[in-house]
Image (tube, rainbow, N blue to C red; front, side):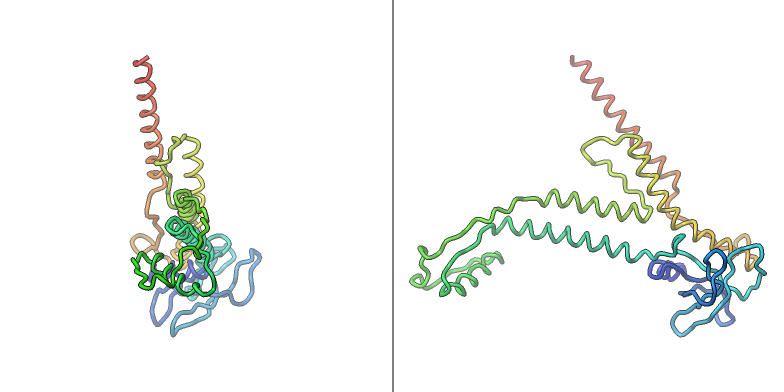
Amino acid sequence: MNSEFLEKSLFTYGQASLLNTEEYGYINLNCSNSGDINIYDLPTKIHCYSNMFNVEKLVYHGLKNEVLNKDMAILVRNNKYNFPTSPTLELYAYRLYQCQRAIDVNINAQKTPVMVLCDENSRLTMLNLYKKYDGNEPFIFANKNNLKLEDITSIKTDAPYVADKLRVELKEIFNEVLTFLGINNIQTEKKERLITDEANCNNEIINLNLKSFLEPRQKACEQFNELYNLSGNNAISVQVNSDLHNVIKETMSTITDLKKELDDIDNEGEVKE
């Protein structure tokens, strides 16, 4: 089986399948619901497919009234509601694009915060000159008789510099992405100091999001091992890249260090007084 293809299926379609075939042995494929649904709104049959291969299989859900049949398949869900990850990340990607584009426009506006006014006869001339100016290209206009300064006026457009604030917003959006994916992203460089409740709340949200992805995968592994009677080194399982306990422990350590730093500053101030 291929874990990368499995995660790609879950990311794109919200569900995938684990099964055993005569042609390839144990494999994982894309899948779509087929046939009826049971009393818990779960499909009784799924259509498993990929490039040059497709097959229909009954689904094993681990219910007591189900008869074990090794020709059945396991339904792997991306989360409890079978929602794919891709639409949410596409939305965040669009927001990141909008924010970055606003930063680019605002920075560019600092270079040319003017609007040039001229008559229609000078329009093409001024347009060509402005393109050179906007492109950081020095220009020399040879015929001074055709360019009358008294016929040219400009209006200042007043573009305030807000790129720094937009960068903060860009980081906030990216941190939301990481939180959604269950990745720790606590920010210790912020000006105001972190407090314990704030850090705990942040970690709790991250852990809940991580569990929403992790638990359905763990359940599918349990059902697969039960269906095919696999145990020990032959059993399949799911592992996360970081231990949740270590994440929380590391965060608490950071808070402790910050508190100690503040205490040292207070003690130093008392000595000076």
